[in-house]
Length: 242
Image (cartoon, rainbow, N blue to C red; front, top):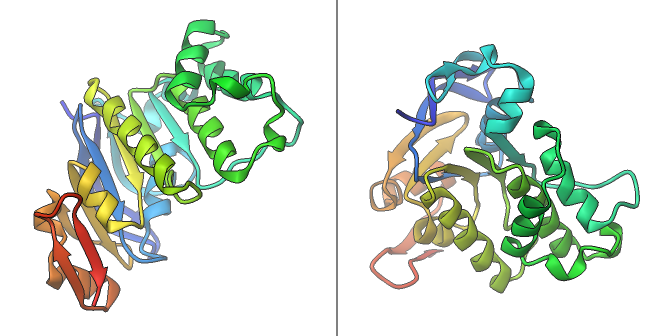
């Protein structure tokens, strides 16, 4: 059974008849130009954006799942996060346990270690750099141990080293029997780390499938209106404008 099953999802003109699924063990990248509908899609899944159509979580209609149970199953990492209070890193990560009503020290410690923020647990989160804070907020989501992790541009503010670390972490998380769906602008990273890709253009799906089937010159010309050089046989894959 799929973890996520989306059928004919519509949000005005931002998403039009989008159908998509996420299987257990899979990391799926949502790609497309600015305004293509990537964030809107993730917001629908996270329960932030109203929509028409069908979204099912592990076979159950998403809208029919009680809010707390849904929060236990779905973890959402937005593009940017900030705290209105001067919380410690430990306290921020502990927020991920709210849907479970506990402060599981083991889950918090594991999340901090996975995101490589364990050395900062007693520091105030607002004293960290933007990239460091991004890893703390990722740890918050990991602490909730959701079956499906949704991440909106999780590597946008990270340096090259941490981009690889975070994407490897998300891939391992998916391969543990859970699922990850993320929006990502860097097509080379998407090709390297994602099992499948969904290419959106003006709210519509152009292509869904393995990177080699989605990242074609024709598809990228339609979505981005540029000619690109594509070498998916290279390690790592190369996708650059001509």
